[in-house]
Image 1: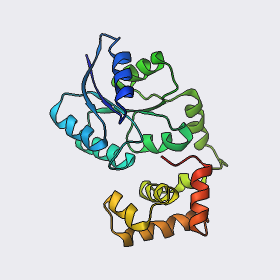
Image 2 (image 1 turned 90 degrees about the vertical axis):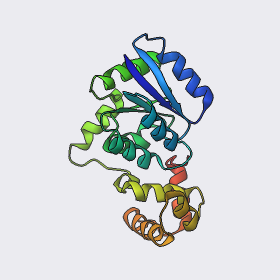
Image 3 (image 1 turned 180 degrees about the vertical axis):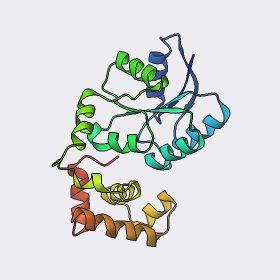
Image 4 (image 1 turned 180 degrees about the horizontal axis):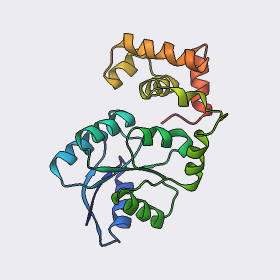
Length: 210
């Protein structure tokens, strides 16, 4: 029996996912969560083999949630299920410890296949993402500038891109304003951006806004 936790902040989405996965009699949903903190709390109270984890939820950033989940519950598998295109989050999610990444426009059959494969210890990526990962092993691949950022720099980039101030980002990420300013300076240097307007424009153009 595969024991599943569904972490998504939309009740209708959670209900739909529960209905899909429980059509397979070998899968049972033992917990649900509407935020990263709720997911971590539920894992301490319920027996779970695999987490269906949404990228965009209230509270801590996705990468922080995923990292804590893997550190605190190393035997629990994670399948990321997101509305965000693969080129925005998939590689970052896999690097942070996820075993698979699936966008929400896939079919119920593909979702069930992904759950079974990840539960058995495998990886699940779409053919398109597999080609992208393979291409990264070869020479001469041009990466988008934001892909070279650390997870924390990426979080700060997205915060700045949504119009948050340094103080607001610091409060959201649990950092000091000075530390956030340092990340801002680093990411602007790495991405060759000269102003706050450049950041907002870049984030909008690449669809990185939540």
